[in-house]
Image (cartoon, rainbow, N blue to C red):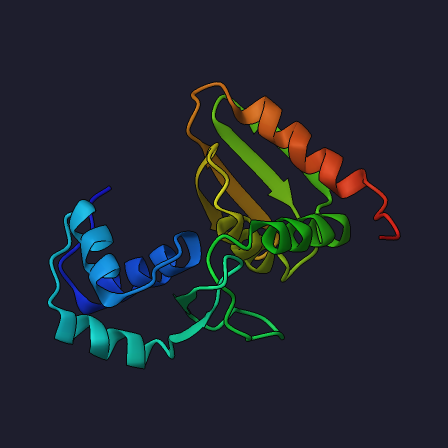
Length: 170
């Protein structure tokens, strides 16, 4: 992955790293950024964390990690690795908004009601599915790009299954 040498690109990468990795210190964040070819000083990262409203929250293992506010109605910062919550949110949204799913090679096209595509694409992005390279959303259409050149059919079936499932009464 190539990241442009801009403040916006660096801050977006910081958000993604905080959502996907339990980052305990700014030093950990410096290392994660360097692994992706982005060099930033601790003072630059400190300013970025303030601008992103990052806070330290309790992780499942009891330690403190950096987190940024969530999107949508509940903006409570969530620690990285809370994949169960992200998966549950995506499944709930799939039941509510996925109208159809079609695949071609490594592409999946999901149809939603008008205005729902970007919201659903954001939920897919937050799950960080290993099979998904990325998503692009319009008003009522989400295009998901699979890493596997022939993975579209399986991923389309996955979204269709999510949309059909009846939620359990846990």
